[in-house]
Length: 302
Image 1 (cartoon, rainbow, N blue to C red):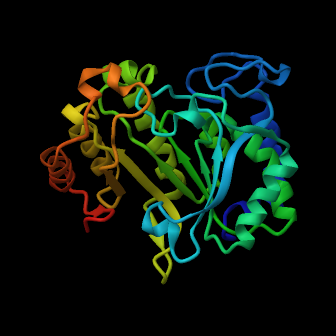
Image 2 (spheres, helix red, strand yellow; image 1 turned 90 degrees about the horizontal axis):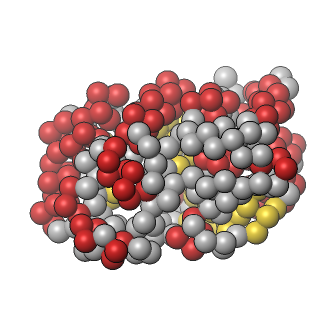
């Protein structure tokens, strides 16, 4: 198989067919698990705030991502505007829940990918792509015809549609989802979504089926596979014990970043249990739970 995987799909014409199939999901929107049935091709917007054109906040090399993505050239991040989640503590709320972004054509999105490759980035990292899968697939053939040949990263919130993910099989080499919650009630309260843990678990199984455990090249740069993020919340709100139990069951070689970056942002101060940073003891307990579950590829703590 060619690498990145999407090159082979483009050669045989399958990539264009996938893009057309994804486009149909926009008619009465079923791109994400909300299944809101919004007529996005007619210019309507649902919870995600995006109609039929891609919306981008910014793009450029990023050196603050996980080590396997950054290497020496950085991860080529494209920050897509808006989100299918409504996290009350979002650190990028200006992008995800307000109107910081601009509509771009498929050609413009393709140019961004090629610019990042020319800058020496190791990959193209789509940040919050869930609600813009059809728009990405529209732009990708144009970018490939322009010479794109670095891996694609699907950097998402974990609340994913299996129909959308199956369209991405053989297109994305690297999946990097958040596993935000092990508890459905916390997800409903703080991110306004139903059945988050069950939806996320099904998505991670599909991602792992497609790409397997994370593999690195001789430079330590990610080549293919699954990399999971888990943000530790105060007062055990993230349900870390259930998160790591599931991930270890998926594969003991799952690469997991137990993240300590939480701070009260956006509307977090309206929720008393979210109104502080996690303590050192809470962070250490999250890492202990991960190791006890059998996970040994913990970013920054191996």
